[in-house]
Amino acid sequence: MRTSLRTSPGTSPGTRRPSSGARLAALFTGVSAITALLVAAPAAQAADTPLRDLAAAKGKAIGTAVTGSKLTGTYGDLAGREFNWLTPGNAMKWGSVEPSRGNFNWTEADQIVDFAEAHDQDVRGHTLVWHSQNPSWLDNGTWTPAQLRQLMTDHIALEVGRYKGRLAAWDVVNEPFNEDGTFRPTLWYNGLGADYIAQALTAARAADPAAKLYINDYNVEGVNAKSTALYNLVKDLKARGVPIDGVGLQAHLILGQVPSTFQQNIQRFADLGLDVAITELDIRMQTPATDAKLAQQRTEYEAVFKACVAVPRCTGVTVWGFTDSDSWIPDTFPGEGAATPYDANFQPKPAYYGIVTALGGTVTEPPPPTGCSAAYSVQSQWNTGFTGYVTISCAAGSSLSSWRANWTFGAGQRISQAWNAVCTQTGATVSCSNASWNGSVPSGGSVMFGFNASWSGSNPVPTVTLG
Image 1 (tube, rainbow, N blue to C red):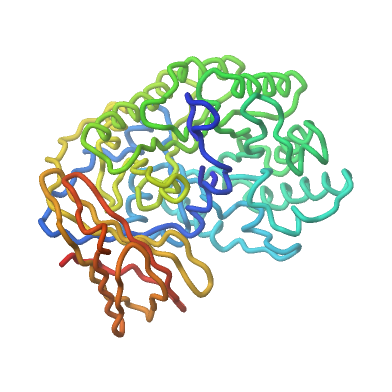
Image 2 (image 1 turned 120 degrees about the vertical axis):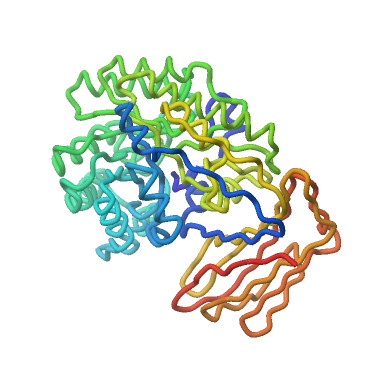
């Protein structure tokens, strides 16, 4: 997820997400955010007990997708304290670990596994065989079926073998189906037929007999044609003796469209003798977020977690990034967002408290925030440059008729282009003011501007002030 990114059950295919590759692009580098308030907002209170302890008391896992380079500071503290499972957002994809044939980069993947072990967390490997985020040498090659099968099984043996005994589970095959339940035409299906799935699972079992092996897909959360195709596939695989331990229901959901058959669907897979994991949960909404939308989102997060708690073989829930500043949604679905349990400033949202309630915890919720804030984020980054965004938001009861965001870069970064704002930079100091048409930020609303900039060596997050 994709990194991943990346879908929502309960709506027609046209209202879902685009390809998982687009979904994952939003997580390629991860995002950081720091906020300065015009009016001090009350600090949100976390649950009396960390989410991971509440989940463990129910016999469940609670996980999050992460980016290795971000596992420091507040982001790292929350990832370590609140979650007992981690999923690499992109670091274990084929295109990440073997960008050119025979040349490997395990740095970020190792970083995540090391972090997890230091924090007594399990890791879900994601993902081995997928139609997206493959290296260009693989996608653009001309392979015989025998060559393609060898490439696939060698890759699985290498990657799973590298982490043998250190990873608890693998999403071995990701997103094999179309919306109508037919097999997705991919490099693997076109070259090897439907049995590539059994071959991949068999190779993964040989590489690490102890790891749990999953097939993972989106829009399979409720009972529908796609989830029924997945059901029939795993039923057949089990009957044939192919190693398969569970299914992953991604659960990229849209506010108001959580399937009514969610728990029923989990149960029918469990009745096959399979584990079920909710692997990439987020619930997106049209922005700006309002109190009413956030309250509904809380109810729906609670419902998803309760559905898992109710089925013994539902192993747990992983959220696809735990903070809105680390979400793929805004880049992939313009005008939508606020999809995760924490806001862009790492403060718990109502959805967080819905999770707490579903897991049997208690918390004294804070009063609603006041004032206006500026959140800085890096949405994508490459070797010499990056794209950043600043979101100006006002809580209920506060508003702005104009705005100016100011910060000082700490490592020589230079802005080359800006949009939706007029930006100037003198030395390390940046000042961005509203355009003629977007100075007004209403109560409960927000505006966003973006920029491209260069960096070298490091790209620390500056503190933004409004003035």
